[in-house]
Image (cartoon, rainbow, N blue to C red):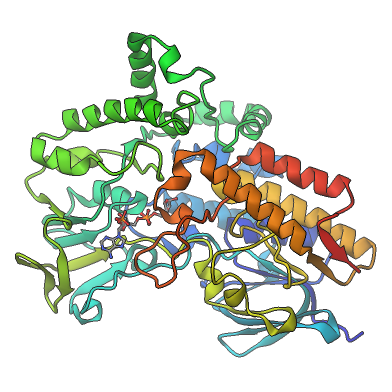
Length: 535
Ligand code: NA7
């Protein structure tokens, strides 16, 4: 058989691709990593909008695989800002000398399965072609940004950008009239950060989300030393929760607890840092509508207390879904921003945006002039990045065709008919619904173990079985039906009004949690990979 250029090619130099590159280097394989950006970082390279940070406790976000790395790196905030996370990933790449395997400014345009070489032929936007035995995609869940389909978006003459493509140089907001469209996790971070830096801020909200305080703070050097001594315990704790965060559900049910104790518990959650308010709540809060409604009332009251104008407060309180049934944006002073004289909320349900003009936004009632328009309008999530690549598998079937009605995968990590391809953070994977690096380490470890098995046994071909894929589809559906989350329109359920194809009512993630997911993965290995054809 013809020699291939590489044993493996990894696509994407974000959190996932970097770790996969490290593993391949450890295995001593001939591999390459292609990255469309000009440097490493993925999410943390692209999203340069003000206020961008993660909602994971910093010490739970770093890689756990190297004790030395854990000892050397110091986080400075409990919830790290984008800039620091980007530096961290650059530090990792330098420390393990991974840059030598990476080629930047290369977008993968096509990947064609070539049975005669039992491998893939890849072509990039620069026209280079490579052959590889295994194709490993680490192309991100939220890397295909979507602009709203308003007429005239391209006509606006002054500065406008999607948050994902925010300018690389800091934007000077002082004295500027700024519009933000979108109030998801991104919009909420951005609005909180720039409200007191702009001349005026006008927020165009379609649907409000239930937000909760992040309670970020600095990490002192004493705290950092303590964290370093506890890393083993920290990762062990994260490994035991469904979400890979510290926060685990409270074993009690909402209505089994006396109202005053319930209230005290919720007050404590609301005033504690991070996702505890969402993921560490009573065990029925995210599965039982009555329990959910009770906590939802509690959070609505908090919003009413924080926003001075009752009419504005009511607009900021979601009426169409309960707390935590979509992604909870974490905020720092978000609601208080609406108490500022320079901040205005436009409910586009009442006053729809009609089109974008050269100088601003035309709504049904009024034309608003702006200096800057920022689109925080989200992503063609999880499958969007795959759709942009022409991936052609066996029998010349494209991945787009295969997933036309929604993704079909085995464990979210491989796709029948697309041999020798591992979708490291693919749709329907359990790792994409977790504290990302925790789930990702799990997925990359598993895929690497499988690759070692293939290399060691001289296996040149693997393909997940169709039965395995339909089994996994059932698991994904069953888990999403169990939780209130699965019933709401959000990017997790494949909803995006800005793209033609919406996988309505199909979950893009495996919502069963990392413990269940890990069990499936472990059994697959111990049973000798029954879900795969290998030869
Ligand atoms: P999201 O959570 O998908 O939010 C996008 C926001 O933009 C949301 O408020 C949308 O309203 C709004 N949107 C989208 N399209 C339009 C149009 N056409 N007109 C008006 N408003 C619109 O994306 P984010 O970037 O905030 O967050 C993504 C993830 O990044 C987040 O979950 C974190 O994990 C990190 P809608 O709710 O659809 O009515």
